[in-house]
Length: 485
Image (cartoon, rainbow, N blue to C red):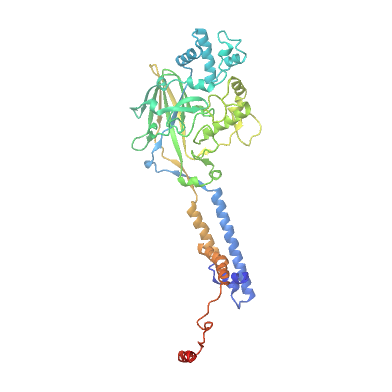
């Protein structure tokens, strides 16, 4: 049965060479020749298809330089503002409301303790609290805040209106506190403009249009700050971390005018890159944020913060109170902060995943598929004013950007595989239909209908009929008439 089906398929298939194997009256040498040709063609087709598939999987991404700069809208960097020192007015108000004490000595010691909790530069007063406050002059044991330190960190942040004096974009003033939104980082709370990780960033009106193009020219942002701050220059996808390069940080002091010049290079990805497996393209889009607790969107820096969170939980069983609130873990109290201080060389240092010795944590974080790379150049000059000014400006519009492209999309891959199969084997989508028809559909159909009773053919007389249909019609009619009589 199967031999009959196979022979029928080979005789009628569109695949090259098969019919020469089963045609009758062929010499065995001719059949052997065609069998060798078919096997070589099939093997060559399989090898080429596998090679093309492997190349598409392992070399699916290519970079190209795009120079059509006249049509670009170049995004501006994101700016994050941190306070450099504790706001005495905010701290005193908190202390008086919390402890109901107004003595200058108590206020001074408690401010220094809060400063260590919020900025974590020193641990002198934290150690005194851990020693039952016996070394304090005014603070008692019960006054030491041992838990809920993350709430204290948030309460010590100054209101936005107390930090900003004036904001301008391309010499047009705008409302600072409308666009500088709270941003939680591992360095503590901050205010950031045009950052995808800031709070309330889901509303489009919270993003200021800060694009630069051939019509508007290079963008310029001017900030006048009323307090001492640290200004971080970032892309909109990143957050400040312990590993942010120091050249991207401006420590802004009073009566200084800072001029920051940026040279920007943008890296973009075509939409089809999302179809490539993450392990193959070696980058992630913001929405590819599985198993991350602290931020809803992915970036290289948020991955580092997540990595540090896990290491903190492993070493101290709690997370730094400066960090964004985790969903499941607890923030450290004073005892946990002592543990973090002892392990800070390990937690704040990065090392390569393949390194075995030395301090640091191996964070295998991928870069983002869309990045804004930049170089920062600083200038300073004294100004006779009571506030700090920071001017951030593009040196010039970029003339080149890099585009992450795919080597072959799904259609190209299908055409390539189909062309290879058609060239060497003569196969196509219809060949699959032939296989289904000859090996499955047709045998099933014949098997089903072979068990049905066979209807009489026109050449056979019906059972019970006395007519002989082999005779002429005239003789058949005379025979019927005779029988009736």
